[in-house]
Length: 172
Picture 1 (tube, rainbow, N blue to C red):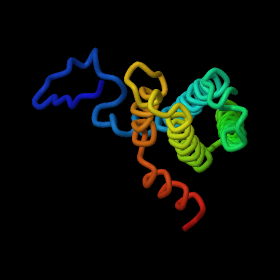
Picture 2: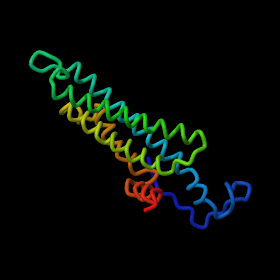
Picture 3: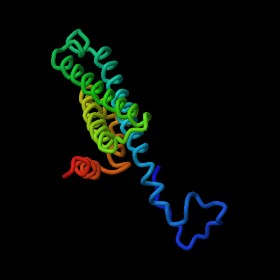
Picture 4: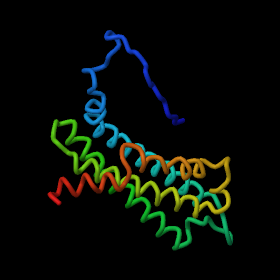
């Protein structure tokens, strides 16, 4: 859940102060890269769950006497989904390793967040399509993933904010 909190005229005892007075925004900014990396990882996890559900459905659901995953159009779509997921995951892992090594990866983490959330959007959409009406039903995990996925591209800075950061890091 998300909510707005207001602390107008709220007194905070010095003992409860986190960081220096009036430096809260700077503290938040220092943690943005970790948040953005976490969102990219969550997007990859969402995409993986959607892919797993689509694969299970494609193997179990039958049409014309065979699993729907045996039809070329679905085989190709699932192959593309697997490829997109792997590329997104590897790019995100590389940025996590670079960050853990203490390197500055501001541009790359912004790229990873945008890329991973795009892939999660695509894969959750594709999973709903593969599952048809069942993918849209509330009791389906895919429906929940499709609905909840949207916040991942907004949290930590929208796509447009990420593109602004990337362009600045490129010297534009």
